[in-house]
Each structure stands twice: as C-alpha cells, then as structure tokens.
Image 1 (spheres, rainbow, N blue to C red):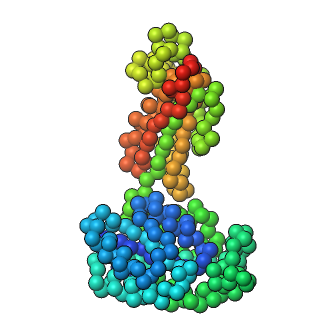
Image 2: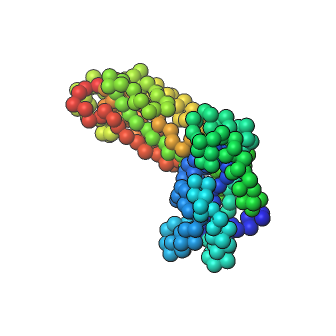
Image 3: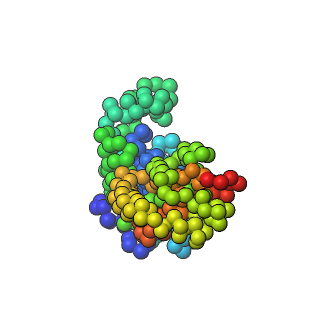
Length: 300
C-alpha cells in the first residue's frame, strides 16, 4: 500500500492512529488536532462504518478525522479490517493508517517511568504484554500507510514528523497571544516571553493622558512618537519574526508574549496593540491581543 493510495484530494480524510501502547499515540492525536482534525480516542472498530456515514452526511463540515484504535478495545479489534474494507468500497472517504512503534526495551522503560501497567498484562510484567501486543498487531502494521519508530524521538520530534506528513491535509497555525500587564501586579505566569517597556517615556505624567489607556489614540500616539520607541519596535519585531517560525518548527502550537510597564495601562498597552497589528498580517499565525491590567482603578 502506498502513502497516497487511499488519499483522495477534495474528499474527507480519515486517519487511523494505532500501534504499540506507549509508542506515542497521545502525541499523534495532539499533533493532528493542531492541524484541524476532529479526533476520537479509543473508538471500537466496529463503529467505524457508522462514523464514516456521519462524516459523509456532514457534507464537508467534518472533513478531517483521526481515530485512535488500540488494544484497549481488543474485543472489537478483529472488526477493523472489515470496517476499513467497507470504507474503501462503499464510501468516498480516503483513509490512512498511522502505525507507531518502538523497541521492546524503550517501551519497557516508558512503562517504568510512567508507573502504568500494560493493558495486556495488568498484573504481570510489561514485557509480556508488549510481546503479546506486537504479535497481535503484526498484520495491521504490514497494512499501515505510514510506520514511525519513536524509540529515539522526543515528543517534539514526533510531532514535527506527523505535521510534516499530514500538513497538506490541514493548515498548521501557531496561536500568538500578546498580553499587556503591569509589573506592580506581577508577571503573567503563563508567558513564554516577557519584555519590559518601563524605559519608555510615561504618559502617566501627562495630566490629560493619565486617565486614558494605550488603546486611546492620544496615548498610543504619545508612546509611539519617541525615537527610542521606534528603535525598540524595529529590534523587537525583527527578533519576534525570527523566533516565531522557530517555535512553530519545534512543534509549539501557542506562544504567549507579555509586554509589561509599571501599571499595565499606558505603554505596555500601546506596544501590545502595535505588535498585534504587525504580527497579525501573517497567514501562518493567529494573533490575539489582551490587556490584563489596563482597567484597574489605579495609575501606572
């Protein structure tokens, strides 16, 4: 079976995610979700034809689907070949089988680290369950359109492999969240990058600007008019335009950028608004701007 035998451009696509327990199916699901796939974990294979009918009846609303099939539902597992034969012969849905594998020694180590029992050996040695599972999955592995050995892969590397292989079926976007804040109220705990703009001239000391925020034109123009602001923004944009593609390349689906001034009302708000406009022109990122502290009843 070739990589493209069941892939039909313009039709709905179904990816069956299967393989050895502990080989990375959770990472695979997360990777496909980032590509816009509708994912269902541990669906009994006997229900695949019914699910395929629902996909066709959605008339394109559900076009990219990934199903995790593993031995947690082993009592239905023998129905998988019949279900896939039905899809091939009776539907317009293209399907692929992604099989994840790893060496026995790596899988044993992963089970030890997670302190979980193997589903086929809940009271026995993990290696016994691994060997039994490998034997049961041998035929399915031979039918897979893509086999990935994750033995030496880190999670980010596995995600990059999957995104690279299936990105033509879904648009991978990086969510860039820019938030302004006031240092006096603390740094956002979820920020990936934090920039301090307290060195810029402060509108707080201009009486008519003090009650306003960086979203007001008068404050925004005041912050932007200084040469040091323009030089800072040139350097900052250059750095972010370099960093963001690197984060996407490493498999990140979201990055949070914090812009802080003293009270989070004037300078940081204006800078965050500017970055949102400049970074929002990309087709490979979705950009959102928020202001954590701009409405606090305090001056900054």
